[in-house]
Length: 448
Ligand code: SF4
Image (tube, rainbow, N blue to C red; front, side, top):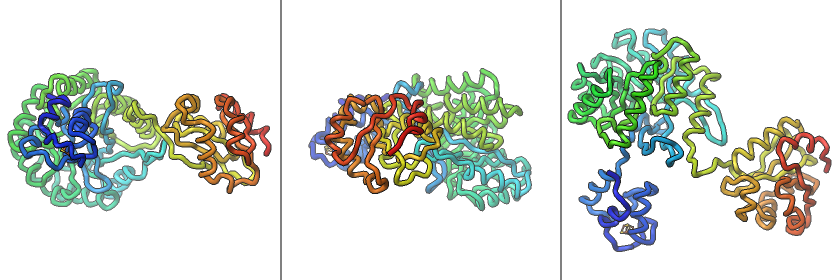
């Protein structure tokens, strides 16, 4: 059960030395209780207290790390059923399912997409993360050859799928250093699979036909010494599968049922032959509540909407998405192109830049850091006001890019144009339209 700030405080040294970065032990305890800091920041916690606190502060769904280096990623660590309660923590990884029965060129081509199908959106790089390799051939040599073919084209971690412990061992000999996930232990082989996971220090997926059997298997695998587990609830395309996923999450979070306190892997690729249904399933599993989602193909047209959905679901609702402060070129602006200013709320940026692009008038767009607030909210909060705008404009050196001195202010803050004129005596401040949709018409009439 989660400890309160006071419970945590009782176990801290209470010397208020400040080395954790907080002025008092109580302040640090409150941050720990809110999961906004790490126990390791206090160097003076006793071993006994550390053990107690680590156990009590562990998230109800265990964090599992897959891969190493730049390709590594985490799943699990979730604490809420619904994003609006707090936030979802670790976005699920999408992957592609490849069989080792395919020829090596086809395997390499399919695996390469895990890096090639990448999109930059709101200054974030969105891409799939894993390659799931199935030992469809049943042959150890082919399994190993496929691992080599994949590793030759990508450093993305693998999900090694086989019911043969020997074949998995052979594949792990090639790729264990990249911390793959092995899939999957079941009631018939869990002892050998657990031994393999411990020997190679890799996470282990477990699967069963129903949640009772899955929880039972989880306890057995943990007793065998495996801590890093991924659950495969073996969901199909029907509602029952979704209900099982939700029950698993609820059991972990609400009932603190430890056997199901692990992230889940789902296989839309295996649940249907219909690519549209597969995509819908992937979207549903993304929202509720898979940690790894394996697709049959990484078609960019299908992957992009899934990644955009992922980005939307896994942003922190308490932190607005922001652009970096700076001067953005929309089109190929020249020294007589308009200079517009707006705030760094991502939605504002994309609406404004989209309308500017539609106008086909190249523009210098000055994006000011106001902690991700929209224009009116930033003005009301005292962050998008004449004095600060003037400081930003002067610091940005936009004056070096144009020969004119005309700055277009969003229409919503027309009331500050006079004051801004005084703060920026070299510039003539023009008031642009209130709505971004009117920008194309405005820009076509604009002249320096
Ligand atoms: Fe207290 Fe430890 Fe922080 Fe020092 S470092 S103030 S002892 S919590």
